[in-house]
Image (cartoon, rainbow over all chains, first blue to last red):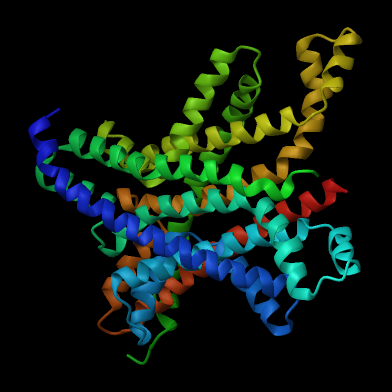
Length: 219
Length: 221
């Protein structure tokens, strides 16, 4: 192992890690938004929207993310929709993550018992209050583990964006291997940087989970 | 040439080549799923062991496989044990390692969710350990784990699309070749080819995940 080489490549990886992180944050945030809206459409049985959402979820969950990204990046540009690589990566990952988040939210919403809602109504809560104090806290606490798993999953999925020429961690590693044949060093750094990104998030999220699950206490 | 757009899929032997590419993907997925199924069941049973050390070792393996993206694992294996193995063998190894870990966790969950008295009743009847597994635990566990296992299989099929990035010539690579060859005549080739591959994957994965959903619903009630 050539430590000089490792020290030299650190800045490259550092920059790549920032890109990976930026794309992850955007993709997770937008997936949460898309997923939340989709789950509401299904939960409240909004007429046409519900069917559209269901078709979207099936397509998103039953196709590989790499193909989704390729279709978005190379396929759609040909028929006029031109996106920048970064935007494309975020859009592709949101298309993927939205359905996973939607399923997570939906299972949480469905887990709220009918008695809970009826009790809320019977003590005179308004619809908004019912949502705010009864449905969401419980639904969210049930959804939390799945949401976390999806967030980590999306962060890992960002590794495919190197395929559309974005200089993320994978891309830098591939580059260094191609240019200098420094396989061991490049791969070691790659693993280290992914651990650096993923381990804290994973620990942070499990700490958060314990906090959010108060809605389940007393069940 | 008047073939604008969708015809590019059916031109010459393009369709056949694409399907052959899909076959490569399917082969990798199938072999990995089979290996993972068998080894995962073994790992899952080992993970329910009495000894804490054994459980911890399995846990470390599982978490290590999980925390690093599969694409990174593919790269690590491809570049470090490049003993003239070729991408296909390497990907089968990586997918089997990953699938075994995930399957092991599914099996562990299913075995762990069995009420304790099932095993104890078996022991009280004088069944040996092997008999307890054969007649008591396995039949009940299968129902609990099959939906999740099928789900894992679709995940593995989807993830096999990554093998193109370590140089395996599969459906996506064939698609790229076709696009490169016909891009001058058919500017929209990449839209149709990638769209077609998108639908191909959907056609493979959707029925499998439907099956998983149906089994889940059937066995839950």
